[in-house]
Image 1 (cartoon, one colour):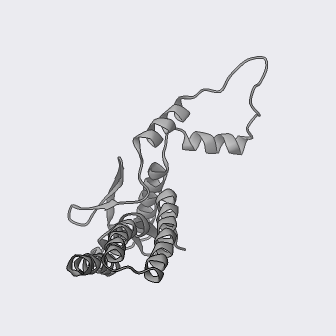
Image 2 (cartoon, helix red, strand yellow; image 1 turned 135 degrees about the vertical axis):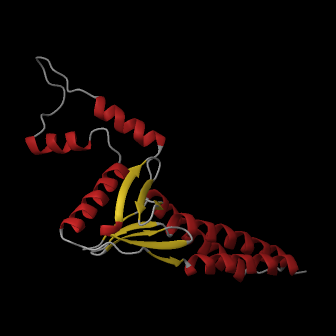
Image 3 (cartoon, one colour; image 1 turned 60 degrees about the vertical axis):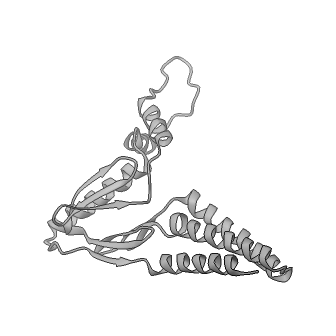
Length: 203
């Protein structure tokens, strides 16, 4: 069963930008007026390539056999049994193989989110004669306790550790990570560069 984790805010914002760009490209083509239109198209191409590479492409995916980290310029697949250590700071850092490090771009833990998680973990339920909040069920309270003081990145980091331990208990053999370049990102960058060259060369 595959599971994917990405920044929802960045993903939604990225597709909003793509829609905005598509409308503007259509308008610029319909009302083409020479170099000014080409310059505008080049700017849109550069910004869209940046949005794709940074906001739309990054994703962390769990597959049956491996942890897949899709970062802006490359994709790394690490067999679960090869995961050695997982630490979470601003990003999730996965050590594997012979001291290699995979830094996952999603999900990230911002300083604000971590501070909010700490406040949530430190909060104590009010005790008095009169309750000001509804009473939680036992299951809800257990879930709240489990999440107290932790960010989404912390939770995903724990899931990676658990999957790695499960793979080793099942006798899975560690293997080398598979790394491939992000040809889609390079295609977007090349297209943006071509548009800039065309805009500069136009008269």
